Image (cartoon, rainbow, N blue to C red):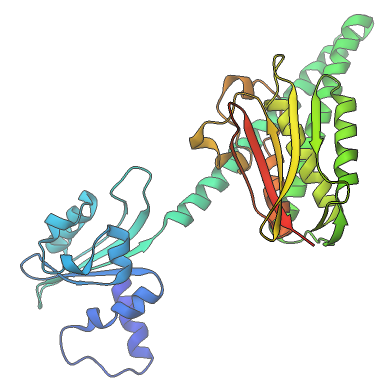
Length: 358
């Protein structure tokens, strides 16, 4: 059954009067448009006879193109080929890409009506479902890789100890240290996965209330400076900064963003991080700025994806689960805020997030 047959069946089952002419497909234009499904009808002369708003949006067309030759105004080669194939075999269903690289994907049904010599095309945007499938596949692939590395190291070093390295104090200490380091990495990874899973499942409960976040920031900075004494963290925030937030979630967000700045935004020649806050309308915008190498523009949004890491040598050489920023994004959204990053000047990156002002 084609998409068009499905909607025809739905219309007749709702006890609507049976159309008395050959325009039943076009009568469905508004119905299809209301659910984001594009409808195109092409006449016996291969000219556009009908377009609904969704199809015009998907193909970059307008009402002025009605009456034009389809091959002249439809820029999708895949769609034109599908229309030609439908004339030869009555019905064709295929997934096609948009007219530009990185454009949307569509599931298209093209049906040729021999009696009326019309071709009816129904198209659905499948971009989001494809993207979700890619995210799921990437998540499983990356998770397998991230788990495999520490597990392999732990196993190899354990085998070395069993095979006689225990008798060599220096070697035993080296192998034991590697086991401890990778077991800690594995623990962090599993903890992050569980936290992210809880966040994305909607099971994470927040206690959002009016909170003075200045002491929280000071405590986070103090702990991270103790662990990273070479890093200079400069804080410019009012002593009584009140926002609506969950205390633990806010602490996690600040910790993850500052740790991210320390790990990827500092070098031997530039070891300064700046933390500030300023009101923007009814929101307070927090900024964590580093002076590192920055993030390529094409990768700015992707850094908040699960397991995604900027494809730069310096970044890939640093250990990390690739989940910290994804956790930040989810926590900030749960607190009714937004999150992002932008280029700092003259170099570096500003990670920012917003929360409601009390």
